Amino acid sequence: MATNAKCVTKIKIYITDMQTILTTYEISSSDKLRNALAAKYAITQLITNIYELSRQLQATTLDKLPQFNSPVLRKTRQIASHDYEAVDFRSIYNLCTQLINPVVQDELERCLLPK
Figure 1 (tube, rainbow, N blue to C red):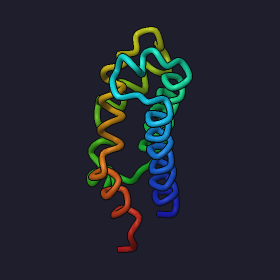
Figure 2: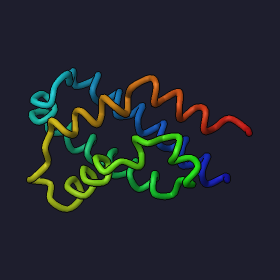
Figure 3: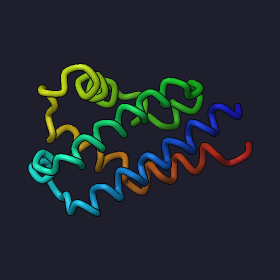
Figure 4: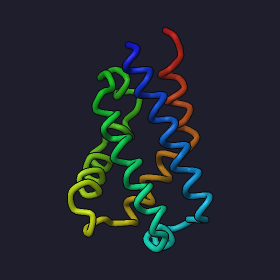
């Protein structure tokens, strides 16, 4: 159970970092992300980190967090890690906006609450 809470906590931190990067580099579209060298490398690394952590979450937690068990996250991580030239920045940007969504943040918070 402690590992589950640690993973959720780290995922929250990575999502906050993602939001900070998008704000700092004034990224409001996939084109802006594609053209911001440091931001695009940082964002794809964060997605990889989030995916790797999501693989450690308990099934009951993943049921509450469908965004972290999605084929989109898995596929994006695979491309970002192994075939970087094929990265579709529209998909990356859309995934970022989904993860930054306050609803997702609330779901993550609820996973940390004692049962």
